[in-house]
Image (cartoon, rainbow, N blue to C red; front, side, top):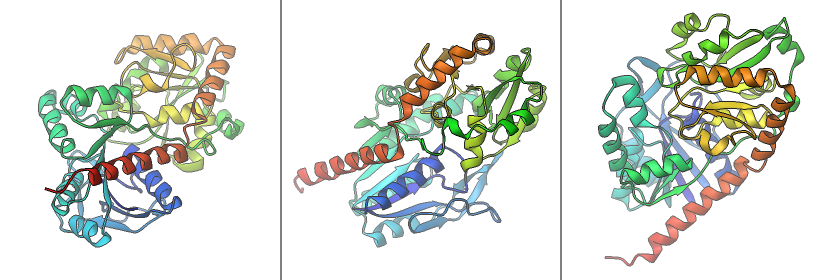
Length: 375
C-alpha cells in the first residue's frame, strides 16, 4: 500500500514520536510498502541523524518558545501536495497536534483514510506548564482524533482516557523495542568504574529533561548511601536539575549503541514522569535486563509487573521512589530476578511484531472504507 506518514517530530529529534515514526517507516519499507514521511525541518545546522528509509518531505519550522529543542511546523501546502502526489492509500498521523491537523484536513479533502497515533498526554502537559487548561487540551485532542478513521493508543490507560473523553474508534497499538541493541550483554565494566569508582549502586534515568518528567523527584535517591544517580538526556530543565540532584552524573543525550551500553551498565532504572502514554525508556531498560522503579500511572502500568519485573510507586511521591530504590539496593538477587523477568517479558515485543500489528490496523481501516457504500 501507499502510505504518507505525517509526524510532529522525526530524527535528528530525540523523543518518542521521532523514534516510533522512524521505526514505523523502516518496517513499512521492509514489508514492501511505498512510504513517504512529512515532518518539520530540524534546526539549522542540526545533524541529519538516522538516515530516512524512504523519501522525506521537510516543512519549514520554528522552535517552540521556551523549549527550543521542539520544532513546530509552519503552515505549508507541502503537506497536502505530498499526500496527493504520492497517491496515498492511507495517511498515518504520528502524534497529531499542529502538522498532523493539516495532514488530517488534507486527507479528508482528498478522501484518503487516516489513522491517528496518540502519543502525547497534552492534558498532563497543560497542567504542568500552565497550571490549567486540561479541559481545553482534551477538546483539542477530541477534535483532532474524532476525524480519524481510527485512533491508536499505546497503552490501556491511554485507551481508556481517550474513550472517557469522547474519542471514537480507538484501538490498542503498543510500541516495539530493539532487543538486539538493548540487551544485558552490552554491560561495560570500564564505564561502570568511571560512573561509580567506589562500587556504588548505579541508578539511572533516561529521557528528556523537562518539567513534565519531574526528574527532581530523584533528589532523595541522590542522598542514599552507596548509590550513584546517572541522568541521560537533555532539555530545558537540565540547569535546575544539576542543582537539585547533588552528586548525580549528567551524561547528556546518548543514542544508538552508546545509549544501549549505558542502559546495560546500570544496576537499576528509575523513571519519574507521571504523564507517559507509553514510556519507551522503561521498555528499553527491561530489554537491558534492569529492574525498574516507575510511577503507577500511564504507560508503565502496562509494562512493569509490580513485584515481578520491578516496583510501581505512587506518582509524584519522592519518598516512595527513594524507599523503593533503597529496598532493591540491598537485595542483589531480587534485582537480578526482576531484571531477568523484565528481559523475558519484552523479548516478543520487537518492532517487527508491532509493525505487523500496525499493518493489520491499516488493512482493517481500508476494508471498512471499501465496505461503506458511496453516497
